[in-house]
Length: 208
Image 1: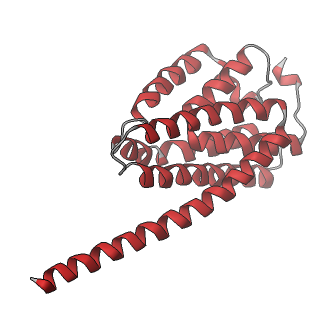
Image 2: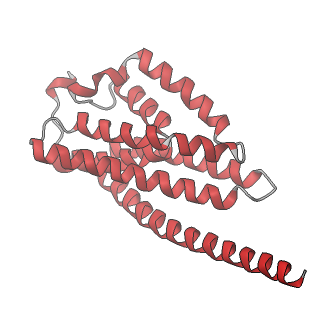
């Protein structure tokens, strides 16, 4: 039945935009949501991605999602976790985009793959930058709240993409823009903080 369903290209690209952003936040939650929706027949998958509806894949992503649910909420360790997952979230998002766009021409399929990886990288980088700014705070609640919001957003965007692709795309693109602004702001803030720290150390040594 899934093979007989052909998603219009513009709708497909809209879905890929939202799903790629969700994968950049939490790739396991994204694949788990897609797999469950496909398994119950709520969302048709292209032939290249039929394996996502397999119970083994769903179970595996469910376990990894539970692991990330806890690992991503531990201050300091979450930065290491996110750094390692740069090599998971971005490539997987690109592979999802490649497999989902097999109905397009080779040129458009490569473009969809590149955009999928780029959008996931923007989401992942924004998430990591915010965590780097929040993690130094002594209380753990900000970190936990951010992580829960990211998990919920990944699941919500994936679901919304299968029901209202245009709305999901608009939200995702707005978040991509916000991520770019946040990254620049946080990098500048960290740079200013390091410069102030260096000046204070220099003054301290000069006074000594």
